Image 1 (cartoon, rainbow, N blue to C red):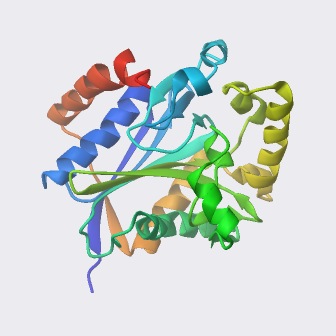
Image 2: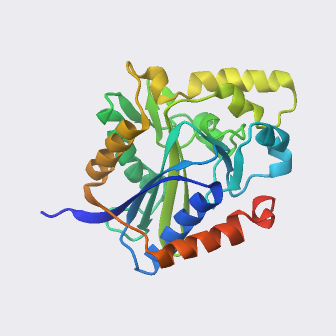
Image 3: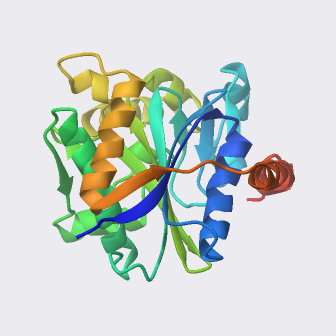
Length: 278
């Protein structure tokens, strides 16, 4: 039986605003039936702190440190916590909610999409699996994550290698379309990451950073060899094809589409009203 063909874009390194605008544009075009379901890989220039749609900048983020580290700063259209996009592969998946392969609930759809990431880790020779919160206490903690840091907050169907979280993802549903995007960490600078958030005291910060080490990990910390970005991209491209049982065909944006993305980037994602609206 022929596999369904999805589009594939590797857009390379983009500005924070461009990256978020392109994800939103792909959602828009897919909702209008102009493009097939889509997998996109991308990177960030400069390295960027992205925050979730609902996060409060003045309460949670140390903007002075963001500037000090010369980072980009952007608010995502998806929920979730703060993510430092630096040494990583970022992915997005765009597919209609009523796609035959997509379950109706957010958590189940998340599991199906994340199957592609799971397979990608396995291609890199890692023992990856989904961890599901088992106790009532664990399930309750999902509703009230203690930390503004994405990889510190638990979620359903967490992708885990050697007991630690290896990929952080967020999802939104608009216009009948699911947009899920997330980070696959190759390396991580924990000191830099934790310097970007506000804490009630230095002690609390240190405690959270120590706990974070036990909960999250980057690929190259646990791999028995150094994995560079091109190898990771290939592994996860194959992983998505296998995990979702699809064929990926490169998709090239037209000049018109690029114009639309750049306009959206400027009007929304570079706009302080959007960035600091909470």
